[in-house]
Length: 108
Image 1: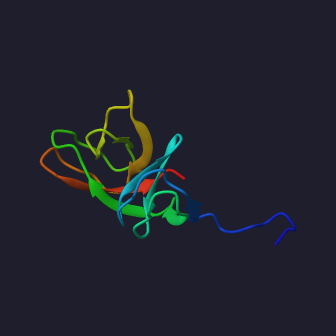
Image 2: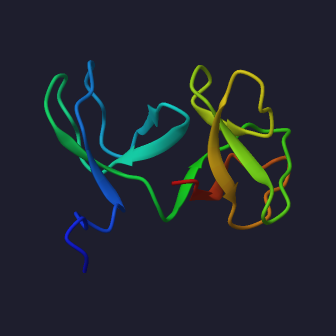
């Protein structure tokens, strides 16, 4: 390890301005993270920024494995629409139109 090394970076501290439920998606600038437990407003909690997660998906959208996936923070689901949404990562597995959830590899 170098003198500058701090941590692996899979989990980060986050201090939200509003309460966050355990397992909820948290938008961190141009990326998303997943709350590892409930985080009260203005309290530091842990969010995971890597790994594969099963999250809500917009029905009607289809994804090939490896396709870019975006988080719609208004609808609270994954979508193929990039405009006005946050890059979440890529499809860890294919998802069909009728699926309500999908596997996404977070784009840390």
